[in-house]
Length: 168
Image 1 (cartoon, rainbow, N blue to C red):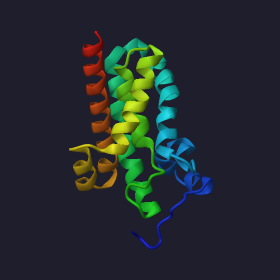
Image 2: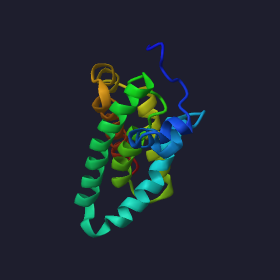
Image 3: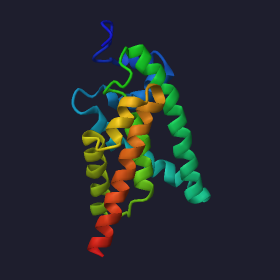
Image 4: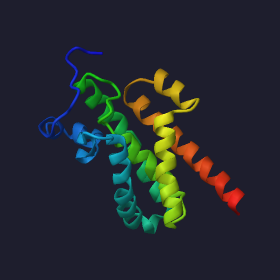
């Protein structure tokens, strides 16, 4: 680890550059407890607002939003990781926010499915089953930060699909 690494970013650090504000999830990454979980929770209102705003464009509009947010995250997380001295700092949770948008886009609106989506995504993001752990270890920079969470989103959606088939 970089001896000059910033282990606990502050609000002033976050507000000093737009990339930091984005990568640190609009401040949710400053949470002293489970910043990835707090960022994932922020994914709910982000999704509700974005899906309402993009409703006239249907699913392609939401996919375009997610793709743009992913690319923005590649830049923001690369810059912020460099500034923090830790490439995939735990406070950087834009990756959770963006990947969770993909999960929510394909999740039924009932609260049980929404809860399944949240806990399933957190489970796969934390556990990192293969190949997520390998992708996380091999891909570096902003793209690596963002990519492993997209895989966690895929696992979540797969688990939801299996449950939906099993439960009928």
